[in-house]
Length: 388
Image (cartoon, rainbow, N blue to C red; front, side):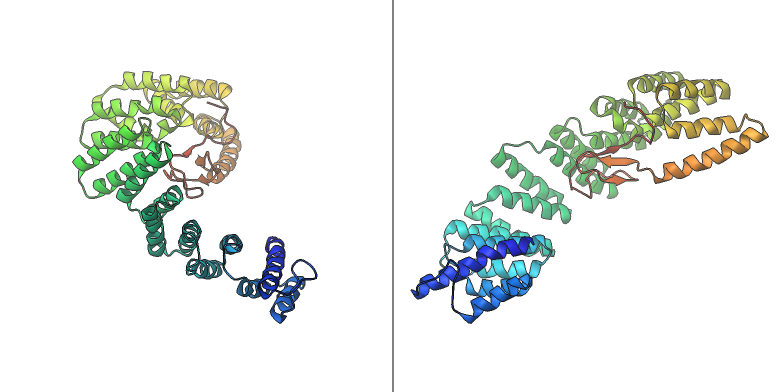
């Protein structure tokens, strides 16, 4: 239907322009006595828009009065997934020598987007680069180049384009640039170049002081180097950057505390995090520590009290597990069935959620696969949980 509504004015414009150029009187807007016009109109009335549009595009010559129609048609085809048609229309458009500089630039921008949709990144990159050299539609061209370079994982070019975009738009892209540096740091870590990785992560923090990803990677670097106290100090920064990510640091943080033998300090810090509402992962880590230090009954009391204030299915699953080891035969059977049901529910529940588009996942993605935003995916609390 969208195509049909667009074709109605195209049909009228085709007939009107043809009549105007021929100098013949027209009985009504859009009238034209040519067979092609009636053939296209017949296709349109018979709800065959694809055939109709081919006829009208052939009739509709490219000039200053019809450029917008060609651009709109090409854009519509691209959105419908008919990229070949969109490319053909936009290529035909920019090949016309009569176009103004601005009209040609619009055509280049649209054709570049067609190529991107078709996965022809090299061709698209050339067109967007040409727009930059023309000083036309530079922001749109740079945005598209950034998308291309992200797809190609060319993080150096991503940084270059982002810097130019910040200058043109006045908008901060610190979050994105921080993640680009983190991507380069992870490449350096894969190449065993820890010094380069550390330098890149410092640059990431310079772009975004609240970049949790950089802090996590730096903490892991410190821990791998045996600097457990430095790693603990680094991981503790996450508390003030974004408390919801604290669970991502817990395994290494717990290991570092055990390395330095600070069990009491660890106990106090976990209590502090739980009081701040850091989520069930921290509470369960504290349950394990209480069970280890003070016994099962103390762990049960703590967890029961915590769940009274902060209901959570994952916590309930652990509570059942603790009760199973202490219950009688009948209680054990009942609780075992309940725990199995809870386990199935927890398996289906996502662990991470994009705050921008709602994409859900079982593993952490620093760039959302759904909307391509950086740093928008965060750990989510399980079903039945209260707010932080």
